[in-house]
Length: 113
Length: 115
Image (cartoon, rainbow over all chains, first blue to last red; front, side, top):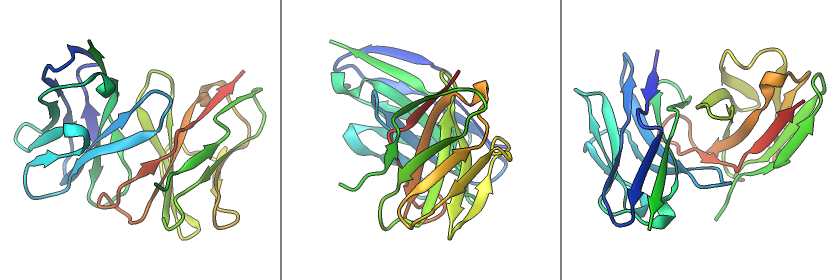
């Protein structure tokens, strides 16, 4: 069965600092990987996704993530965060034969001035 | 920009009552979903719907739950007899294509509180 682990429930960081939000997954078959962001009182918005090809995926708002098959990881990174990046970030996985997303528990990114 | 809209944004109900949560997916989308998030827990898949039938459902989606697309624009989730543990944020999503290649667009959620 698939599962997603986001080890950090909260990540505090100062503005303009780099950040990495960690995500590990487990699955016995090929997977697709996603990062979603949830701003306060809003729905989930897709940041980026990995389906195949280049393991470095670039998304919106300057975020990127790298798929590492040997470590079963898909960590999200941004070189310089902004106050407006404060939100909840969810990693998700989907197996190739289903359209069901399995989400992690989320990481709350808090950016301080 | 087209968006998924959900109503109500918040509903409070008594245990045992029926609840209907409504969603208007993006107009040219064909695949529809409900997810829920119990406070402090992960977002969980409930059901996917295509061509007027359920294509996949989770073990959470028992006989108390049903979905319907009554008029070609709305997509509803009905809970027949609510329980305390149904209290959660319910998210509707839609997609133009099936599978991971199709990006899911989520609504802002409907918060259900069961007393």
